[in-house]
Amino acid sequence: MSLSKEAVDEFKGIYKDKYKKELNDAEASEAANNLVGFFKVLYDCAVKEAEKKRRLKKEPEGFHITDGEYNCLICHRQVTGEESWYDKWGCKCLLCQKAVKEGLVPGFVCRDSDSWYTMWQLKDKFGLAHQTAKKLVREGKLKARIVPYADGKPYEYVFLKRGFGNKKRNQGKRRSLKPADKSRF
Image 1 (cartoon, helix red, strand yellow):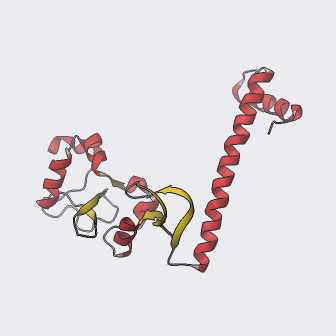
Image 2 (cartoon, one colour):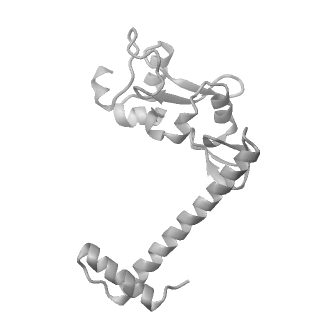
Image 3 (cartoon, helix red, strand yellow):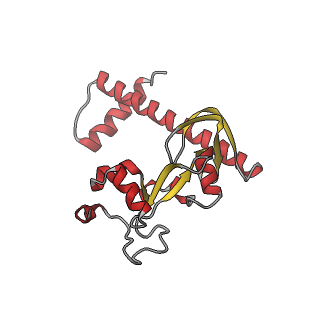
C-alpha cells in the first residue's frame, strides 16, 4: 500500500516543522510509508492483545495460545500451542506458569521486567559468575525465586530487586542487589 501524494506532502510539512529539515519526495515517501507500516504492526499487535483480554473474561484462569509463537515472559523460551499459557500476567511457558500459580515466583515479574534480574544479568551487571551465584543462593546469601523442572531441579532463577517483594531484605547477611554492588563479591 502506497500513500497518496497529498499524504506524503503533509508528512513532509510535519517533518520540516518538527526537525527543520527538508526531505525530497523519495525520502518523504519512504519515511511516511515506513511510519504507516510501523503503526500497522502496532495496531495489529494491539488487536491481538485485545482479543486475548476479551477471551480472559470468558476464561479467567487462562488458556493456551494457538495463534502463533510467543516468548515466555519469565524464561524467554519460545512457546506455541499446548506449551503456552496466557493469563492476567501474560504469556508463559507451562513451567513458569506453574511457578507463578504456586507462588514460587510473583506474577508481577511477567509485567515488570525491571523488577528482577536473570542469571545472565548478574554476570553482565555485577560480574557474578553463574556458579558463584548458585553457590551464594545455596548459602542463603543471595535470595532467588526458583522455577523448578517437574523433578524439582532448578529451571530458571529470578532475583528480585530491592523493594520488589523481598520481605526479608536487609536481615542477616542477605542483601538485595544493586548494580553498584559489584565490589562486595
